[in-house]
Length: 164
Image 1 (cartoon, rainbow, N blue to C red):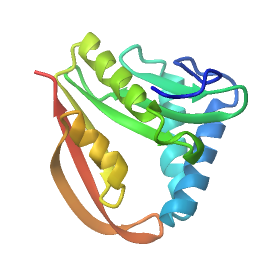
Image 2: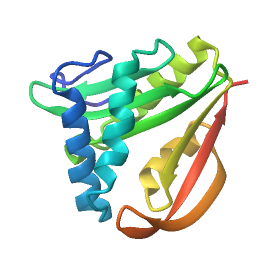
Image 3: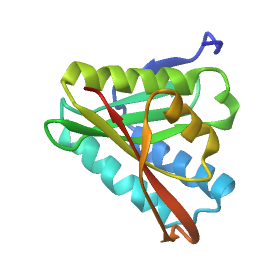
Image 4: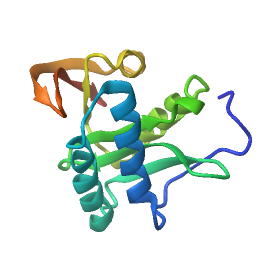
């Protein structure tokens, strides 16, 4: 990773994190993807449930320097053998520096340690850099569906990674 020395990855939730992660998703996806305000509750509600549950089979990794949060990814337990990768986001100022790869590797390693047999994730087809990262790490496209969501027509894609 060619990143900055002042940036670290932590896996604890601190006061304000939930709101700031929701804010980042709303502003970045609004600006870059044209998503409307319905996207924020899509992030905020399950993120709040994730934090409240405190499930040891789930974890979040937060990328942060001296200032605000710069990115995150989480693994959410679906059942005893499957987990879902969620809330994967990097601020544009830190993209292309290896942080996305580092966060993805941490989440896959966590799933292996927990004994999950598969990881799923949902994305949209125009997230080319993210899709390329998933493919490089062995995820395969499992499903696509086109519909109106978050204020626009889009194609959602479900990717899966077998850990067996």
